[in-house]
Image 1 (cartoon, rainbow, N blue to C red):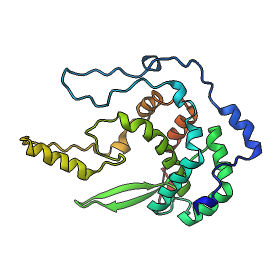
Image 2 (image 1 turned 90 degrees about the horizontal axis):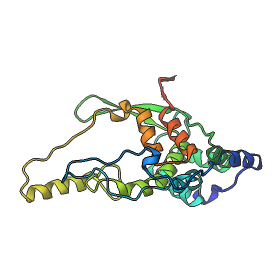
Image 3 (image 1 turned 30 degrees about the vertical axis):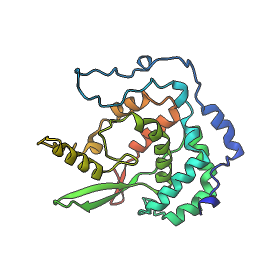
Image 4 (image 1 turned 180 degrees about the horizontal axis):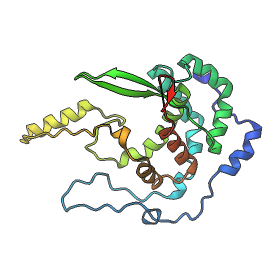
Length: 244
């Protein structure tokens, strides 16, 4: 099924729009401080929250959307989305339905991504019970939006994951909560007697989008990617037939 989806073609009428939307590289020698990145400040001996890395060149992130739309990246993203299965979003489209839709409409969707005009659909509200009582509210994106999110994640993750803390285990490739527990057990075996478990309540519900986007913009120069991330953050939720 994956091989039947043409992830490469672009309608002729879209080529001019894409060319106009591609960012101007501008100066390629700016330092991290000139891009507004905060300097790392900490106490001597304190564990850094991020690994030390060389400043990212703006040129390296100027054409991220082209990487997002590369065929190999999209095939891997589609395999991941299809393998995860999952419920339909607000459009009611299943994985099988999405495959047919992508075969027909992907060239237009790709054109929108490359020209910076793609608009994701709202997510569908789903409520699931928590083990300790209460309700956890989740948002289910449409299958096509899940494909685009996964493709974008793959491009950003390979750049950013190596810069994260060595002691961070959540939602990272080749890492898991089981590894975090094993590390805690290792600390106990070394003689430590206290393990602190922290959780930020409703972080994704309450995070300030402007601050978040400013942090992303410090590392991403492609304005189409920034616009897409912002669009996903503000796509809204469809609950009981009403947009929120």
